Image 1 (tube, helix red, strand yellow):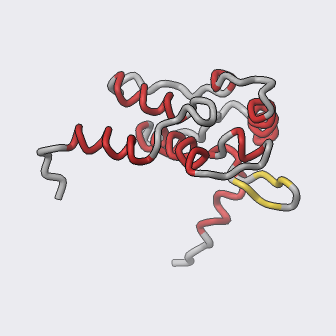
Image 2 (cartoon, helix red, strand yellow; image 1 turned 135 degrees about the vertical axis):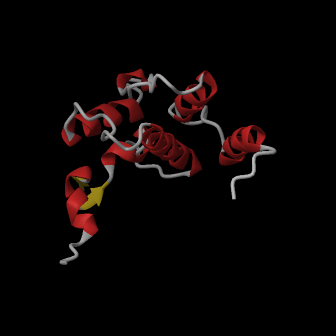
Length: 134
């Protein structure tokens, strides 16, 4: 059996910006323009990853868009041309609770309006309280 470099299978998930290969589909608007990385941008990425997990990783985020399309929309959102996160929409899994969908939507709100990781932890902790996971 030959083992291949797993990262090579996902080359199309990255987009070149100033000679840097970045996972554009998971990036927050402010990381594109004005190039700010923070806990708030990590919350956006967490929301995308949560969506992936909740959809069984069956689809790439924004699957109908090219990486260039995603980049352009994020760039416009980051420069306040399109402030609403509605300019990039992910399909809502029908079987998810309204609470979980609302949490994902909160993760994709404009910079400064997203929950903190402590608030996200509290959200999950309250729902898992009393459930024996291990």
